[in-house]
Length: 122
Image (cartoon, rainbow, N blue to C red; front, side, top):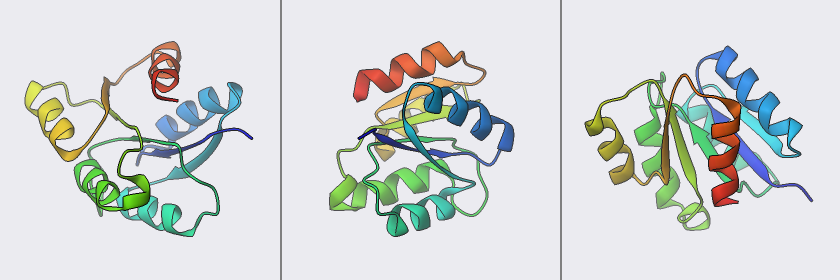
């Protein structure tokens, strides 16, 4: 059975690119357009989610809030979470780590770098 990754980003282009890259490597991919959508998908899916890739700047619930919410759920408290953001400041990285992110990648990115990061945690 393949591992399931939830991709959360309000940019359809990013979601499409990341999903395509992951599906080509045999991963099952779920997508969400913001943090609230992601929490709903995580609550309603029958699949165990093995990893989350999330943007930071999104409507309704941003990436920081999403990460904090995920970390409060015992089932997902130690699941790897990769931030994929255009925010490059060190303070954003620190805030992401403090919220509970496992890794931080900066957009734009190459799919090889993303896949290498995913494989590091799965």
